[in-house]
Image (tube, rainbow, N blue to C red; front, side, top):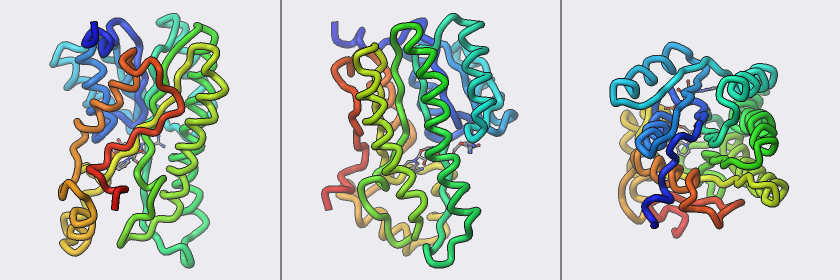
Length: 256
Ligand code: NAD
């Protein structure tokens, strides 16, 4: 009765930025739970390579090139999915970038780039795929936020990243409230530092590593799979009473 609720058998899941890292792990979790996967990434070759790897494991996967900062492309992909499959059941807004910069010397373009991918991209995807879900009478959206939407990271400076993730959390709540009565749930997972290529620079910086791990009650970084299992929970009926929730997966980081 309970384990069945984690199944997403036959559902169509669209995951952005899923060519590697956390997005790829989330795709695998959803595939293992029975979903048909649409792996999307700005890097089409990376998306196809990830898709090929998942096909070898027996999952039903298509890959698509999608830059989430391009609303016309997002709308077109949503229309294409509805035409091909009739509906989209699960959207995971995972695509994101980070740039470390001091606020007082940050270039206009570095501010705009991060806000464009991390916030605008999430909205364009929610708008397009959410509209299709509302028309179909239901669906679930999982946004990948960050503990950076709750705390200010240290020692690296990344005000635009932190602001973008706090905005994603409140966008999550806003859309959850708008769509709750029409069958579409919107939640977010907010991870701590996860060992991916985004954070690989820490490996050349023992002092920073010391800050990150030392600031975490669990005294370690997380893995993409540990975020993926939370995303699966939020995407599935196992979380049927939840909408507008921002679920921390942070090894206790915000406790300190
Ligand atoms: P990653 O850099 O390993 O992977 C990100 C993927 O997104 C890449 O494949 C990249 O090509 C794609 N991408 C970048 N810009 C895009 C765009 N405009 N449109 C579509 N795809 C695009 O990153 P990751 O560590 O796996 O992070 C994934 C998400 O998790 C991001 O939203 C990130 O902010 C969030 N997050 C990461 C951490 C961490 O410590 N790694 C912590 C908290 C939150």
